[in-house]
Structures are given as structure tokens and as C-alpha cells.
Length: 442
Image (cartoon, rainbow, N blue to C red; front, side, top):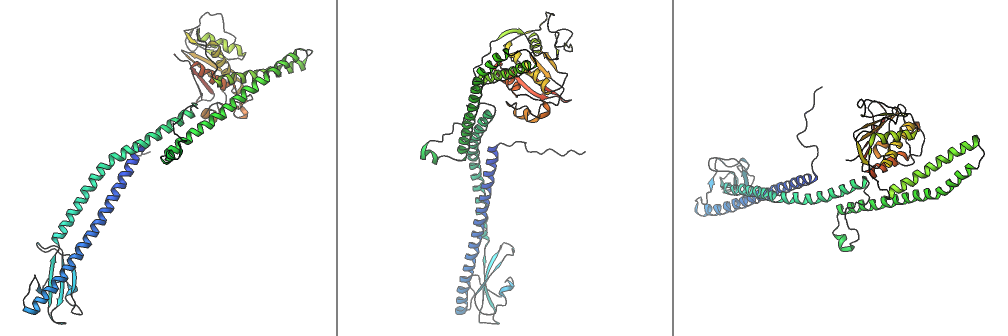
């Protein structure tokens, strides 16, 4: 397969240079248009003046010839160079014609001619050389070209500067929009929209775009605040009835109904606790309590609390290839290098990731600890494309085949990772399966 040559221009051309190039092209087009129009108008004026001079010269020479019989003012009778169009006129009127031939030192000329005594008589002709006028025209063209180049050289830096101002304002708007899309809902462009009539006169399209971005951020912030407040209110309102249900379930006689009711109430209590935790994370009310703890031991404890069959690989004994089952979490006394983090929140993140892997993926589920990184991987269908693109959404679990749930596990894990200052990355393995990678900060 023959590779196509790479283009010489860069893949991304800044807007300021595009505007400057457009301004330069416009200036060149205007200069060319003005130069052509001036050239055509001057050339036509030169020819009109030459024809008028030829007509007047023929009139004066004819008057002298008829009175004295002599030729004056450069007049000639039937000259050999007379254009054919003037040799055989149908009447005796004065006529002019342009001759573009160049002979010797004579350039293009305008001829004026008239018969001396009517048809059949000789032609009295006068030749007006246009070389000086055409030389002046060439000098005018050169002057126009130099003036255009000087104007272009002076205008181009101004165009670059002006385009830079516009590009800088647009870049500020783009950076603000990127911060808003990244979750910083307090970011604003600083565009004023309430400056009255005087300020409105100074507004332009960039200001309108910036104001629209600010309004969009305000609207999005209001909607998120309403959603967060609704979540917090629902969680708090449900906490009391759920506690009452738990107390009522304890009064039921033992049996299958009592067990089923207890399981459903426990699920409902877990949902309420998750909602309360999300509301605290949204409000920014969570703060880590750091401590120096062995990372591998905390991860093993978190996996053990899930009660799910999960492999744990660490580099403590025999290298990173060592594998431990979920039931082998104690007794070795080896806990690896300690890290400074909040162990309760770390356990919460790892536990949610392991539960999510078992609920929506397929076994084997493996947890790997290496340095300050914890990787949880399953062998199921992997994360949905929309989740990888937009991140997890509460009360949404993706495709039906991924199982059931209220979709809060990954949301809580990401929120707790932000509290710890850690990075939680969600991805799919090349050979299948979802991969969640947690990197603790230094």
C-alpha cells in the first residue's frame, strides 16, 4: 500500500493566523482591484487626450496647408505608416485611429487624418506619439504596487494584533466551557450582560457567546443544586420510615416471610444510606481523616467485607504474581509499604468496585495491588460506551444484561476518590472485561 504524503501545513492552525491571512488576502484583493481600475481609467484618459490632440493638430495643420501650401506641426501627406482604416475614408471628415505598432524610438501612436480637397485628394495626417504618457502610466503602476505592498506590510501586524485579541477572548471562553464540562460550575467568563444601553453598544458576538456560556453554567448549577437538594431531602425523609420498618420486622414471627421482609428492608436501608452519602459528597461536607496504613492489608480487609469470592494479588510474597483467595486475609503479618490515606474511605471505594464487578461482570474478579495503585478487574462485557464517555450516572446501570442495581456504587466510588485526591479511571480490557484503576496520591 502506497502511503500518501503528509501535508506541509500544520494539523491545527491558530485562529489569529487564519484571520490575519484572510485580512491579508482581502487587502491584496482590494489593492489589485484598485490598481486595475486606476490603470484602466488612466490608460483611457491618456488615449482620449491623445485623440483630442491629434484632432486639433490635424485641424491646425490643414488650416496652414490650405493657406500657405506648407506642412506644419509634423503633418504629412499620405504617409506610409498611416493605418489602413484612415487611408480610404468615405468622406472628408477628420478621423483618428490608434496604432499599437512600435517602430524604432516611436512607441504606440494615435493618428489623425483628413483629405485635403474631398474624395481622391491626398490624406493629411498627424502622428501623436504616446510613449511619454505610457511611460508615466508604467511609473504610476509601479507606484501603486509599492504603495500596496507598504500598506499591506503596515496592515498585516495590525490584523495579527486584532485577531489575537479576538482569539484570546474566544480561548478564554473555550477554557471556561472546558472547566464547566469538567465539573467546575463556579467557572465564569466574566462577560457583563447588565451594563445598560452604553455597554450593550460595545457588545459583539464574542461577548454574546461568553454571556451565553455563563448563563448555561448558571442554569446547570441551579439544576444540579435542585437535584442534590432533592436527593438529600428524599434520603432524610426515608431514614425514619426505614428505621420503623426494621423495628417492625423484628416483631414478626420467624419464618420465610420474616426473612424476605428483613432482606428487602436491608436493601432499602442500604439505598437510603447511599443517598445520604451522595448528598454529603455533593455538598462538599466530606473531609478525609488521613492515617498511615498498609495498603495491601486495607484492600484485603475491604474485599473480605464484601463476602464475595475475589482473588487478591499483591507483591508482598513471591512477587506480583501471587494470588490469594477472599478467605485468606490474615495471619501473614506482612502488609507492604504503608500509605497515608483515609482507610475508611479507601475500603468504601474498593468494596463498591468489587461489588460492582460481581454484580455487572463475570468471574473471576481479580484485585491487584502494586505500589500505590489498586486495580479491580472482572471478565464480563465491560463498561458501556456511554459510561466511559460521560462517567457513571446515579440511578442508571447501563444495559439490561449488566444486571440490576440503583447505579450509585460507581458514583460513590468516584466521589470518595475525589475526597482522597485520588484518580479513579474506568476502562475496558482489550481481551474483555471492565477495569477500574485507583491511583492514590503521593
